[in-house]
Length: 175
Image (cartoon, one colour):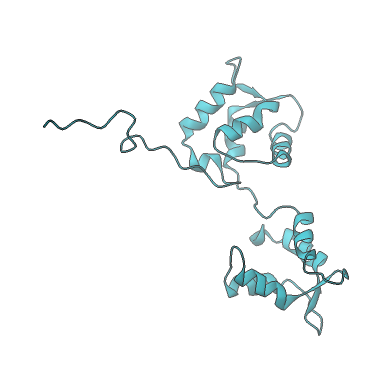
C-alpha cells in the first residue's frame, strides 16, 4: 500500500501558540507579526490607529483573558489624553509591559481580612505562614520569611494586616 502524506491541517506542521495564562503578556505568547496582524484587523481605516474602545477586544484577540477593570486600566494607560485612538507602537509597548498579578491594595487587604476572626484588624503571622507554604500556589520558606519580615508582629504573633498590605504594595518584589 502507498503511504499518504499527513493532511494539510495536521498538527505536526502547524502548531498553534499555547493560550497564555490570565494576565500574561500577549507579546510573550504571540509573535510580533501576530500582534501586528491583530492590530491591522482592528485598524478599520488603515491609517495606523485603533479605537481606544476596541483595545480590550484587541487584547483578547491576542489570547489575553482580562477583566472589565483591567480593560479600563489598559485604556486609560494607552490613551491618557482621551483622543479615542491608539497607534501600533503604543499597542505593542502596552502589551510588552509586565503586569502585576497581585491585584490591588484592597484585594490584598480583603484576602488577609479573611483570617481576622474577631474583626480587630489583626491576623496571626503563623497562620499566614501556614497558608502561604501549604495551600494553593505554595511558596517556599524563604519567600514566606521575606514576606513576613514586612510585618511588625506583637508578642502574640499578631500583626495589622492593613499595614502589611500597604508595605507589600510598596515593595516591588511582591507585586
